[in-house]
Length: 249
Length: 60
Image (cartoon, rainbow over all chains, first blue to last red; front, side, top):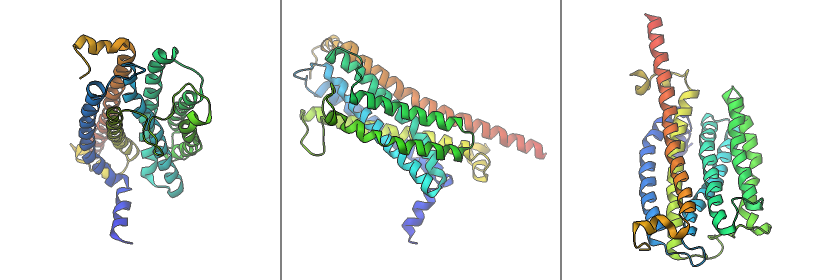
């Protein structure tokens, strides 16, 4: 086995990941702050007023990054859960568990900002259309994952049950993404797509992308904070936890 | 620059309630979540420290 592979396996153990995560957290917070300041500056001071929606469209700078993250975090969470199920690695389940609350909050922000955007533009806080309903289901999937894991005392069994729920729920993510294409919906189509050039002003697009980077960095930072706590909670009985300087003192 | 005065900025062209209603909730969540995560870390560390002290006392 070559050296690089060994290194990867090394960081797959909670014991070596714990201090590594601790060293990474401040960097991700710093990046989140920098992108957040630049992103909000572009969003509120540089991006021009929208021709149709006036200043109300500025909700997009929170709504789209949060919606992207809510879907992406689910994919990453299901990926870790699946890895844990296949390889029976300890860290995978902890990662999935650490990501779920952040994903749920991102889905909540997406629904909340969506309602506050829908009210002035569509005249209603909520409609049961495909995009909104599938995002709500994503929110419930996160809640279900968290509740299921909390209901099972044995951590390894909780991981397995949660992993199956997470993997089955993955089918919902492409449904959310393509819902604006597959069904007639009140929700507008994708503003940014890999296939065609974006249908918006350059500065608006930049504001959105920088805000998305901020949300990325935030999610990584907060999930790493949570995974550190989870590692300690689950490895309470191990020697290395006992020997940690922050436990010894 | 889009705004002539702070009042104009806060009014958001009549969409103030909706824009700020979104921004405030978003910021609130993104401040609360890390606070709760660090609280969780502090709680488990406190429990571990206590356990260690109890073990040391047992041994004595």
